[in-house]
Amino acid sequence: MPQAMTYLPSLEGQELMFVQAIFDQLTEEEARRFAMSYQQRRRDPGLILILTIVAMVFLPGLHRFFLDKVGSGVVHLFTCGWCWIGTIMDLVNHKNLTFEYNAKIASEISAMLR
Image (cartoon, rainbow, N blue to C red; front, side, top):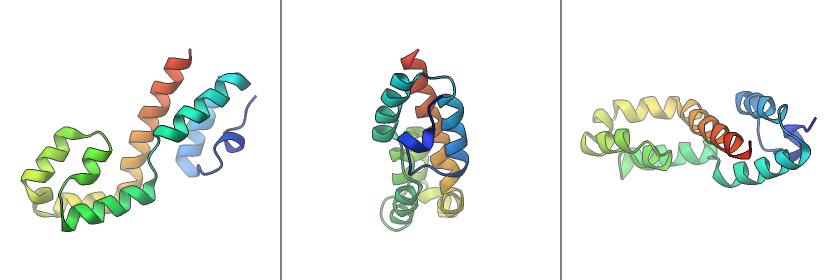
């Protein structure tokens, strides 16, 4: 059984547990292909935090667009991040936003491999 930490050492916490559950169902070759695809498509929580700060100052909703949440990105853009309240909430919840995106990507890649 392949270990997620072997292929993706930068993962931690909730994301690591989620990816390990996927790895438990994969062969070594599938795990290697999954890791390569996932590494290219996943988003880093630190980057999302930086983009959220930039969104607060320059371009509201930037972080939402980067997480493929175009609808809420447009809403943030036209409402100045709900008068900055939504952007401040996203600052606090940037790890959860990133995990949701990464979990969706991991599920898509896993489904493609089967």
